[in-house]
Amino acid sequence: MGKLENINWLQEVEERQDALLEDLFRLIRVRSVREDALASEDAPVGPGPKAALEEFLKMAQEDGFATEQFGPLVGRIEIGEGEKVLGILGHVDVVPEGTGWETDPYEPVIKDGRIYARGSSDDKGPTVGAYFAIKLLRELGVQFNQKIHLIIGTDEESGWMCMDHYSQHAEMPDYGFSPDAQFPIINGEKGNVSAIFHFNSGENTNGTVKLAQFQAGLRANMVPQEAVATVKTDHPEEMMEDFGRYLEGKEISGHVSFDADSLQFEVTGKAAHGSTPEKGHNAGTYLANFLNQYDYDAQSANEFLALAGQTLHEDFEGSQLGVAITDEIMGALSMNVGILQYNLTEGGLINANFRYPKGTDSATIQSAIERALVDQAIQIEMTKAKEPHYVSPEDPLVKTLLDVYHQQTGLEAYEQIIGGGTYGRLMERGVSYGALFPDSIDTMHQANEFLAIKDLLRATAIYAEAIYRLTR
Image (tube, rainbow, N blue to C red; front, side, top):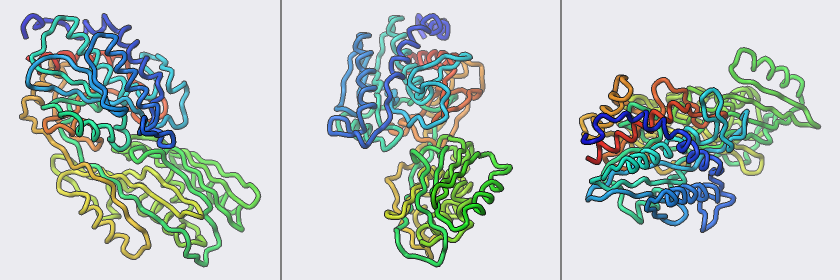
């Protein structure tokens, strides 16, 4: 490893901790949630993500790096020379803050050695860590024999519009990693597709209860933490008592109120990343599960609540839809019910998001769902799929990254497959690498998201040595 052979990478990062946190806090303070209602030609996913991208590029320019911006969606920080390109792909957009925060999500707070803020863990913290690693290497006088492109996206949490744009206007790197998951490494990612179920209004029935409104969920890749529904009934006291009994012994909380001729139900569960729905408590499907016991005056309401509250509720592997499958390497398919909406005039919509292994695909999933729901008047729409991605543990990239992790931590280095999707899959030889460790607490997409400072420092040190070794 030349003159840096005996360097203490973690010590070098720790000596620069204040500067690292200053860079990170600068970006966290930009609220970079996708807002389609505010989208424009100049800001296709809203002003926040674009502002965060431009703040990052401005910071890099102030540090003396060459940068390039590809419209309002994606940017690149560059260093090094050579024919080969090492890519590091991160993102500055964040999921909506939701409810339940104890601090301002966009004013970082350090408490008990943790940085509390939206984006601290996903993905501003890790991306800044990778950027700071490059900056450290430059400060140490490293001459790179490859180009390094730190590519910054603005739509990772939604449709990846940013990377579609980048691939149309620039060459993708030859290989690389995304700092957007866990160590030791993520060298396999399941496929990703959503089934959107549409329930048309109309078709009255003999039921006596009316579902006026139902709302839960912010994104397909988040477990809904809050759910609300408005119901009209001739027996409000009975439903209120039923609701109280339903909540007993469950890991959710709820409240019901009566106003004029309507009952307002509210349920609070626990948010989680959509790739691990079993770690959350889905407020939407729980509320549907309760309401499904009554007969409604519209076929669409009965079908909406039956699907959400019976077929999909807590079926994290999609067994009742007939889509369950397990691959020896990539594991089992998972399903998250991320968005649930219903009203009297427009009918209903449910977005069920699937993370699937090798051995199945979007068309197979759709066919299975259609067979399972053949007797119901539900329209099924499939979103554009991302296919499963896998890089062999024998690949030199994987071997190098695992060796750096083991050398710096002393911990076992092993391959991992996840249901979450990262930019790593955009490169044929692409993986995800950190920044969470096996003993880290994962709060991605949750209220009070945090990243432990020690984890940020350790990850930055690992990134610095990994980049150094890969570009030798």
